[in-house]
Length: 189
Image (cartoon, rainbow, N blue to C red; front, side, top):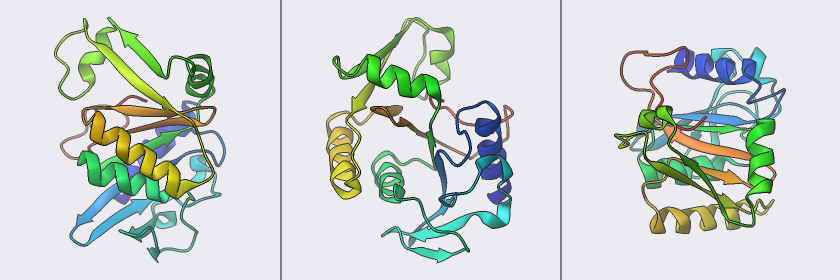
């Protein structure tokens, strides 16, 4: 699991979607008790190695590893719990950050009629319109976590969430055989 997550992190970093220390990434390693394997805060994502990854518990406390967990660990936990995700990816690309601001007034970014939308779980046709909610960013992570949890209750089939002027959260699976350079993700990146 460590090697798979590092492979994905490196892919996202080299694409420019997690520049420098930006972004944070997790993979579920245990449901009971809940344990996530996570990228540490403050590390350059292009230079991470498997032993740099942390293990956190259901409260977001580090139980294994040398670095410190991201301030946004609670967001990974709520996304994992509420969506059944096996992995959560949080990117900081210039493009998703700009789009989150441009479409903030509408509160949603709509993607329609793109062939690759069929790669999202449960989508069968390119004629689909994917609606990615835009949530105001906040440094109050518990309040932001509650806001996202409420959003997921109202819209349980989301594939991603944009935090305004911050970045994209998306989730999926690390299970199955590798089908692309970054594993078997069926998520918005």
